[in-house]
Length: 260
Image (cartoon, rainbow, N blue to C red; front, top):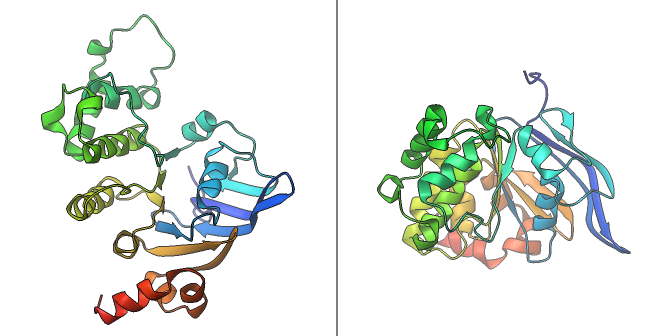
């Protein structure tokens, strides 16, 4: 069990350099269980690097990453995943030649105790099949049960990836620009989907669409030149002069003028 005084995710003086270039410069962040956090900042601010450090794709130059109170520095991505953290990527990451159902079933096998066995027929794994069907309903792809993932629309593929991301039962979810490339109507539906499927989980998302950010996040972390310059509620971040100057600028002014 997780101790009640631990954070779901905590970054302590996290730093990352590539050669002599410091990309992440002493980031401190503490995310409570069940919070939805949006990470925003200009291009090149270090947002994706931060996600790569948290998920184990990159090793930190110094500092610590704690997941549910456990230091995960140096662990491989699959080890971190098995401790309860899952992420999606900017580029959709699915099995294109498998059906929607098969994609989702693959995502739940390890969490249900089916490790590396070549002697089980997947059709006979009733708990895995039931869980995959639950995920189908959650991501609104029931009618696409037998469709190959490659034949889904872009928005449907992103929804499938969300299903795969949560399929392993992780309690900390990282979504990297989940609505990129979507129309306004698709984005609106997708925000509702994200809210639904991450209910009760801790969510961190990198996002450029301010409508998504202000509509989804409990708190916003603003990253500029590898540093978190603000971490607060959307209202407080919107009103923060330093944030407006560094990143939001006229976008915030336009939203305020529109009464949003």
